Image (cartoon, rainbow, N blue to C red; front, side):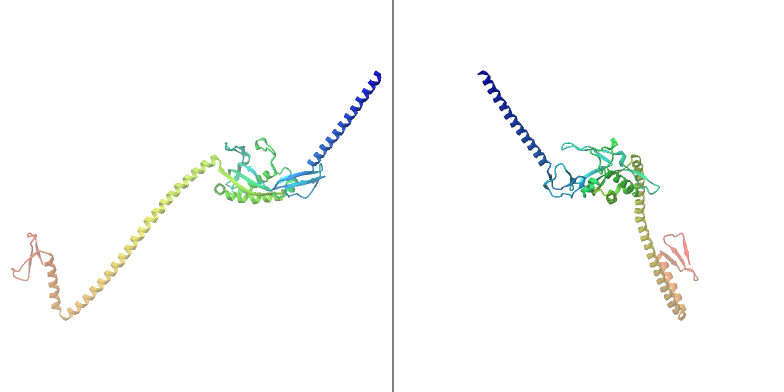
Length: 351
């Protein structure tokens, strides 16, 4: 009796174990199926934000670029999606780098890139010099396929640092070449005083070079931040500027003196000339009047010589008496008249 009960119990346990095993198997298969479906679903869709496009490759072939924002379907484990933002303006510093990006409470910190900022200017003459140049290039991806596949290492490696001898990206190498060729056409003063001209010269040259590489990049803006002299050059330039200022000051003083003296001299010369002309006219007029008077008198003299003589004698006597205080002495015999000056009794005047 006991043996039959033990057999019945063992069969019941075996059946329960089989049922549990079957249930667990179904559960594992179901979970695996759900997981596989989730993985397939996750790898079958992708999302594009506004301004971002997708470059899709399938078995190494490039499919048409998807430019529509939203959720899209792809072949799982076969299609590779490369998202590229074509509306973002990317930035690259040249001649300096951001040492500390800063925060809302701290200003960013910049440092010079000594390998880049030393640039030769006026290189086409025998008076070449060196300036310190720093600028910013802003660019945008225009052709995403070319950007991804035409040029290797187009941009600087992530975390690029010049002081670690990192490999430079193609854009930086192209910019470096353009800068060093373009700046040689500028004189030192032009480079320092006309930064906007540097921007105008570099942008098209850089764009042309990148187009030659079929890079898919469009240069949006080139902005020269600073163009400075070397310390030794700056010191010499300041001395030259001081000398030029001194020269300009002396030239201004000379010009002021010229502007003051010459008009005065011209005015005096004009006055003397006008006075001379007036005196000339006066003398001529007086001479003409004297001639006319003489001719009239001569005409009378030829007619009545004695009357004219007496007239001249009386007029001369009137002049003598008018200008002097005299006494005439007629007591002496003869034709001799004696004149005595009242103011000087010791002196006798005779005629």
